Each structure stands twice: as C-alpha cells, then as structure tokens.
Amino acid sequence: MSTKQAKMILEKDFRIGEIDKRIYGSFIEHLGRAVYGGIYEPGHPAADENGFRRDVIDLINEIGVPIIRYPGGNFVSGYNWEDGIGPVGQRPKRLDLAWRTVEPNVIGTNEFMAWAKSVQAEVNMAVNLGTRGIDDARNLVEYCNHPSGSYWSDLRISHGVREPHAIKTWCLGNEMDGPWQIGHKTADEYGRLAQEAAKVMKWVDPAIELVACGSSGRGMATYADWEATVLDHTYHHVELLSLHTYYGNRTDDIRSYLAKSLDMDAFIGEVIAICDYVKAKKRSKKTMYLSFDEWNVWYHSHEADKKLEPWTVAPPQLEDVYTFEDALLVGSMLITLLRHADRVKIACMAQLVNVIAPIMTENGGAAWRQTIFYPYMHASVYGRGIALNPIIYSPKYDSKEYTDVPYLEATAVYSEEEETLTIFAVNKDTEEGLLLEADIRGFAGYRVVEHLVLENPDVKAANTAAAPDRVVPHNRGNAGVKDGYVQALLPKLSWNVIRLSQ
Ligand code: AHR
Image (spheres, rainbow, N blue to C red):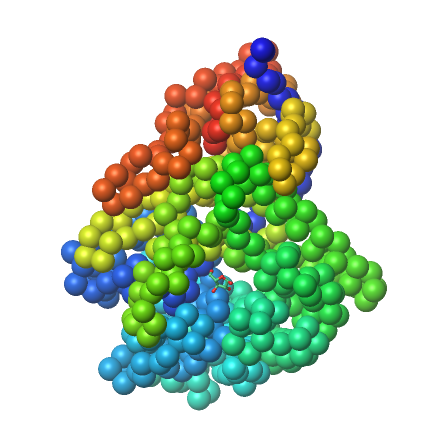
C-alpha cells in the first residue's frame, strides 16, 4: 500500500485576510482555581509583591495572549462588580450561584486589570445582563474608562487608579439563551436589553466596541432564530456576535472526534450567513464580525465535578487533563479559526489557567503546560500576518459521525513584514503518515527554517505535575523545499508547523 498524498497550492495573492491577533485570545473566569490558585496565590514561592504567580505569567507570555475575557462566563450573570472594588478587607464574600462556590472578591476589576498588563493582554470585559442591567453596565464603563470628574471615575481614582483602564471590548452578558444562566432570557428580552445597555455604554464611552451574545452552542433549540432576533435588535449597536463551542470524545471514537472541527467550520459559516441576512434585511453597509469567545475541549472533568462539595472557595472545578488527541483537535480548531480570519476577529480559548486550560498549577507547587498548550502557542507565535486561502487536495475518510473528512486539516499564514510563510497542518490518519506537497513557487527563495511536530504513540498521553513533558513538540520534521515545492511527511496523528522564510 503506498502512502497517502495531499497537495496544497499557496500564492501570496490568494488571501482570506489580515489576521486579527485577538483570535489568539483566552478567558479567565471567577471559577474553580482559575483566579485563586491559578493566576493569584499570595505566599506561593513564585508570587510577586501583589500575589500573582510569576511562573504562570511566564507561561502565558510564552503563548502571547493578546486579549483575555473576564470575569465570566456564567459567573458574570450573578456578579456585582462593585463587590470587587475598594479596600479588600471590606469586600463581601458572596455565594456564586452559577458554580455553587463562595467568591471572596479579593481579586476584582483593578487587580485583574493590573495583572492583565503584566501579561500584555487587553481585557474583554463582560457586564452582567443576568441579574443586573443598563445602570450597572454604564456605571462599570464609567468606573473603568472615564478620565475623572464624575462619581464612578473619581471613585476609581480614590482606589489608587488615576489613569482610566481604557477597556475597548465589552461583552453584553454571557450565554443568555441558556436555561442554566442566571437571568436567562428569550431572544427578544435579551435583544432589547442588550440594545439599551449598548446604547448607554457607548454614550459613556463612544470608543468601545461591543459583543452581543449569540447562542451558547450550535445544538441549542433556539439556535439561528436566537442570532437573527438578537441581531434584529442590536445590529446598529454592536460590532461582534459571540459563538461558543466545546467538544469531547465521549464515545472514544478518535476518527469522529478529530472530525469535529468540521462542525465548528459549519457553525461559523451559518452564523456568518445569519449576520449577512440581518445586514441585508436592514439594508446596512456594516459587516458584523464574530467573536468566538469560548472554544475548547471540555468533557474530562464532568464526572469529577459532580462530586465536589458546594460552597467552598476555589475548588478544583473543570480541571480537564488534556490528552494528545485533544491537542490534535485543538490544532484543527485553530486552523478552522484561521480559515475564517476575515470574519472572526476575536476568539478566546476557554479558559487559560486550571479551568479547562492549557496551563495547570498545583497550589503551592508547580505550573506546567498541558498538551493543548502547544498548538495554541504555535498558532499564536507563528500565526500572525495574512491568512492565506490555499487550495487543498486531501484524501478523505468516513467516520461513524461524519462523512468526507479530509485527512489533512491545513492552512497557511504569510507575513509580508517578516517575509515568513507558515504552514499549519494536522494529519488525522490513525494508521499512516501523509505525504504533503505544497506548491510555493510564488514564494521564490523560501526555505524551511523548522518543521515542528507534535506526535505521540499514545493518543491518551497527558502532561501532569509528575510527568509534565510526556507530550512535547520536536523539530525533527522532515519538510524541505525542492524546485518550488515543500515536501513533508506528516506523521500519522500529528500536529505540524512548517516554518519557511526567505
Ligand atoms: O467556560 C466554562 C463555562 O462554559 C462558561 O462559564 C460558560 O459561559 C460556558 O457554558
């Protein structure tokens, strides 16, 4: 049997568009050990003078995370942001009904903004449209962004923060279509509230941009109608619409599991179609962009979470231990986002530390990189510039859940400034390597700098505190350029980054 072959044709002028670096964003919610025990642990040997773990900051800086969504998630729909400002000793402890925990409010808006600065990230701030509304939303914008001379801006200054935070991106609530959400609403109820909140938030600061809630998943019964109705109310007031998705391999069927990026691709395509339908209906010239502000694998921790005691501070919730196969799907999802770089302007891997996260910590102990850290880090570091639109020919397979699944999931990013070309590719074949031939004759003089590969003989291999380096990439891939063609063997079940430059 001869090895399967796939082809790509790459041209500098075949472009999807400029990549907004914010598609490499992430998310930190007041949930589990994301904040307390994750980014913040005073007394830890690596903690800085403010109690933030430097080892965690270093790992985040390795990825280069341009934007971080905060403070939720489901948490935000019951959050009083005023609980998290002012002297820490006077802040209330509250029951968080979303996750059945106790929120100590030691970290609030100003502490988080200071921490975000230390990882050079913008913050995508969510307002509570569950239990609260227009007034609290506009007050938070005033507290954060107004220079001075008003009640809330002067209060911020009295809390030691003279310069406004100048937060640009704001989420109008979270997953308001979900019955699990505190303050769950119908599309019309949410659409009206979001429209009015958006209006006054922009009256306080016209420089902000706003994200309206789309569905919390493609499988929701109200999906599509929700988007159309919400946009009907908000189209002129918001810049982006959100999408959320999580996948899992519950049936232990890797061929179907790795095909789930096709679902993500279809989801994005459908939401674009709905946005453009509303655009047409409104005879609008404005294009609605997408914020895929929650995406990841999430299923490993479901059973463990059911056994946790309620009403504790920072319990180990949603602590998925990611396997090698999860990293392959995450890589495929990143490629899918890049293929929609013309419309997806923000995407947040959910989440960043401990909670369904690429980075794990032990309280008082180590911090390490989960398997999914690597494709995320590679895409963020090497995937800046122009998303190319390659022509791809790949052999395909059928799985139990999907038909016509290309073995090769791939795309390429070109940086005109740096004169680099990077091919991201996943070989989903469980049996054998895939020979890739990429036509790069339009990139005269380009040679392979490095061919990074993430592969592992055990699809269930994971990185843990005891064995943090079981799944790590190597740069011994065999890609080379001959007569204007990149030739590479992509090992069976592998994530590949082929870096080329002049
Ligand atoms: O990221 C975990 C949770 O998933 C978020 O709180 C919620 O928005 C989603 O359902």
